[in-house]
Image (cartoon, rainbow, N blue to C red; front, top):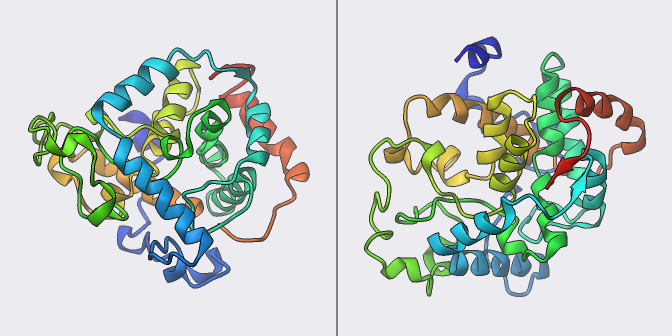
Length: 292
């Protein structure tokens, strides 16, 4: 726990973490993460259909299959910058808040983290690379297995999952008594580190960081692993599977959530001007050519 204590932030009131100041955003905060259904709205319908495919197909067997495929780390070799620049050509089909290339969001989030906590350079880089696992979309992985909120497979789906009421219909795990109960294949307070999460960019990038022996602190890797686990860190679900130690992870994920969610806007940062600073961080924490 030495590292967690070293980076401990005592002055943040957790009750305020989901109510960031208005200056974080260009629109009313209540308008973020709007998952209302409107078949006449192309953006909302794109988001809904992405989640429908995700919730239909993310099963225990599917996730294990993805681990077997992707955790060989033989998709490509690239530097962090080369991988990030690929995101110039990716628009997240699950995101109702912004319709810009993902690299823009990466720098928006990183710069907000840098502004609020200039002393934590590891947090700036964490924000920059948190979505880098979306690179899977360029290697024949459908976006419903790359983007969007995550949840554990192998146990009952929580009520706070977006589109929960209808979108899981037809998922075969619903009829499997090993997987459809409250605890499913887990046990009380097993810890979120032991959950088999739905496959996506969070889990993949976490595994990429560990495989490439990143010098980022472990809490940075956990932020990336669980930043899309909204049913837990924001919805308050799955506490029966969490431990008291997981609260430290949740605190940091909620801090990071301020930069991940509320910085999304049409204001595009000067990426070329920012590269020298972030390249120094890459060289410090995640240097050289990585195996993805």
